Image (cartoon, rainbow, N blue to C red; front, side):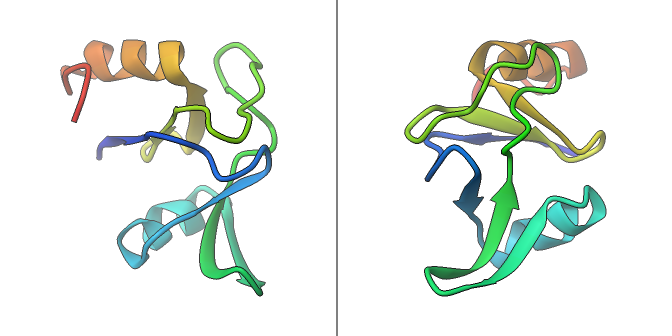
Length: 89
């Protein structure tokens, strides 16, 4: 499955997602629902799985749908290249 690139986080804790990503977020135990500001959110408050970097509002980040990992920009690009997904979508 893909490593999904998000151009900007909504906040340091979560980013709103569409229905196409809900399945992956649920499998990774990162799905949040029931918030007044939207229907589905990807939780990333634990930061980058590879280096611990915090994902702040406005930061780009990646979601590895296979591992369930959230990755900062640098680690996410490296993971995509490692898998042969290319650096950008």
